[in-house]
Image 1 (spheres, rainbow, N blue to C red):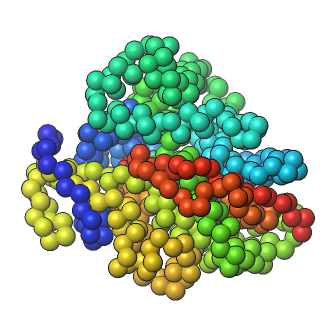
Image 2 (cartoon, rainbow, N blue to C red):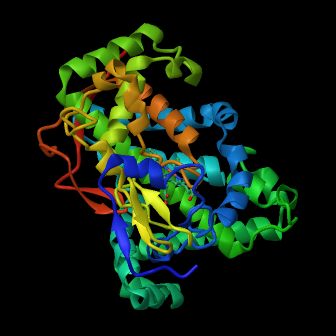
Image 3 (cartoon, rainbow, N blue to C red):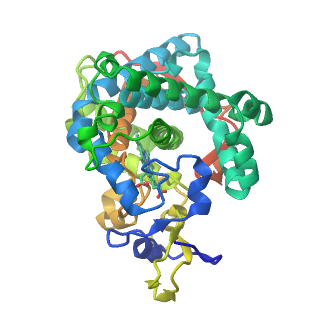
Length: 427
Ligand code: HEM
């Protein structure tokens, strides 16, 4: 459907539920969503119908049950990062937890979804090229959004040339090439699927034609778009939430202590870590994660949608068909009428007022909401629990005083990395 040039952004939180809800199967807006170069993925598809077919197939790896069964793979990587934190802390160096957590999320996504971890955790001081390359992508995406000419120039020329024209994207160009090679290898020899370290990669589902009503496996380009989406959707979002939550916990001794005590209560003997089910029952851990999700907000750009031809009512205003509309997550999460002292980190607010739940929207709502929500929650529970139980954490003085960000679809934090002095605890 052709869109009008009118774009409305709503600031009232109620608009969020009027736009993003299960009854609305509105198209995504091409101007924003073509800028990710993932047109044939669950995320980049413009229409509900196209994305639904893909999401129905992928849902099986991201369901609550599937995630519960893969928790061992997640914990394997968390144990590896804790070992790396121990090595770094033995050297008495403050640890860059901004990069450390990003390396961990990238390793989990690549291992879980592609069956081949990039081992970013093992890079000295967590200076992993893939993490640095992914951090540069926000700038490229903003340029892609506003200049089709620039986008075509970078995407349509051979990779050696695009790397020269836009050096900051070099790492991502290489990563895309790596994904294409992996997909081509699996397409040419499906037996290779059986050789992946586990059976729950996205390829096991996406490359089986029985999974589709049309009995047709997506093209290599479409599979690459999906793999790229999963990597970008799942890495920095979780990394930001961990970094922000840890930063505030280290600044607030009361909250830090409350979390520690709750964790020690269910995890008295170091060698016997609790499972995901047990962690799900911890109210303070859950409140810490909700508060970190609220403040980081997941995605900060308004997720623009196209009003259907018959028009719609948003916050009592009649909006004509084809208008592009959005309401950014931060307009809900930072609203002072809903959240008292909204910029303060206060896990307690979630324990005191269950009604707030309605206004927690980091994963968005409606038919295009996050596909990876169960994985994200599982990762956040396990990571906060393991890191804060295994280490005493202190904010290093080189860390920023406050977390400043600008919007590049995700919040992009600037002004220095959060660093911590981490001391391993033995009991
Ligand atoms: C804290 C972690 C996460 C947050 C806050 C988050 C947030 C979001 C949001 C706000 C959207 C909607 C985007 C839009 O409407 O354009 C979304 C979509 C999506 N997310 Fe997540 N996400 C997280 C983790 C993950 C993970 C771990 C994965 C998978 C590995 C994932 C996969 C996806 C996919 C595939 C979509 C596209 C869904 C669609 O367009 O229908 N996300 N996510």
